[in-house]
Image (cartoon, rainbow, N blue to C red):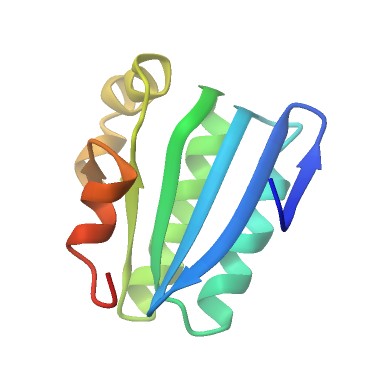
Length: 122
């Protein structure tokens, strides 16, 4: 992916669309790769992009550390007046959110187009 960072099993790319940061993840989000996602999410909020759209369609796995990264980003984004939108979760990743109940605190969309359709600047 152009403009992406990779650490072994996870690749993260960030682009900006209007007031939103669109973060695309591919691979496995776990204890070893979580910082690779945490850093661009936090940096985006610090730069004024409080609406974070995370494209999860390429995620093959997400453990509790990855979930905590997304929950932390949600708190920072909401404190800045925005929020986190999750798009395109596959069954394995969606199951983590279902089991923990975390899906209830995020805005979840079927795919990236649906997530972007409801955002200003789309």
